[in-house]
Image (cartoon, rainbow, N blue to C red; front, top):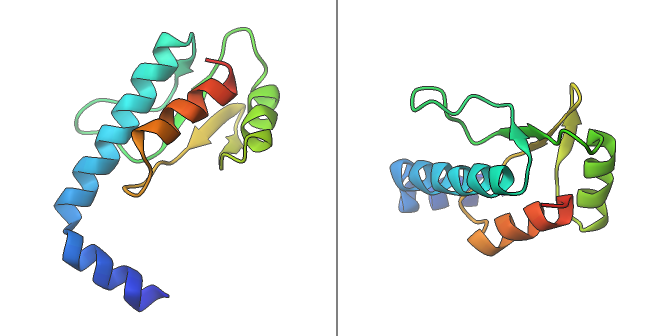
Length: 104
């Protein structure tokens, strides 16, 4: 539960978790760009977060969302864009699988 999760965060270290999450979101953004997607979330050093939003210029976001859902990848459709929020327990392979499932 919550106590166990808080203990895990304390043991791992918030700075380690933050670095891991930002590394995964950087990887996600790089792979999305290589796949022809447009990242719409802010990615400046002071603005980065664990949330990545993106669109594709030729594929409807609803279609992207359906592809991700069919691959059992948790994402949301917000304001016409796809939103994915990796966390420190996700792997680099899962990032690649998400981009591939979306069509990248």
